[in-house]
Image (cartoon, rainbow, N blue to C red):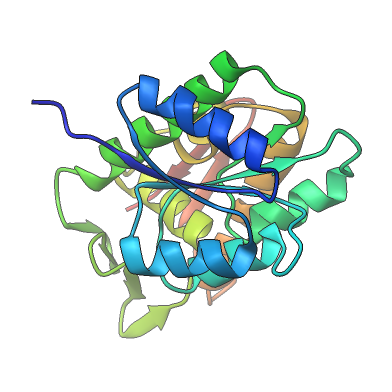
Length: 230
């Protein structure tokens, strides 16, 4: 029997949450709804859903704050819903806070359900990774503990930096295209996602490559993508 996914939807528009709940339940999911950020955060911490959908503008605790606090506790996939007037910089901030996807209102139910399925699918593939530990030279990644060590030193990474490093470390010495990394870590390509990939690669290098005289651990293959050199 196929496992039922539990989805938490947080929005102060009750008509919207009721509509999304019915649409998701028709797809076979179990759904919890909340009308405020504090209430939704409490549900997320207590019930540990498989996916959180949260509106950016909430009356008490806004969507960015919910996303940030969740990322301090869990790697659950998070989709942020925004109004049409949202600025590009707000999306970038949301991604840095740990959001996995953005959906701009108004949106169609079919697109919403497709985005949900894509996030759940990527999360499930990631969680079912082949090995708990990945090694590349003196780099050690523990998927379950979400820890990274380079030699004797622990490396503190954000959730997206961690996912990106795993995507590269699963295939050491092999080039991973930009499209592959965008799809694997963020789900789909766009102008914002492309710049975000470059930013995350730069930050990974800053955190992992302490000696500038040493060859780069993460190398750029011009016109193709990146590879992690073991």
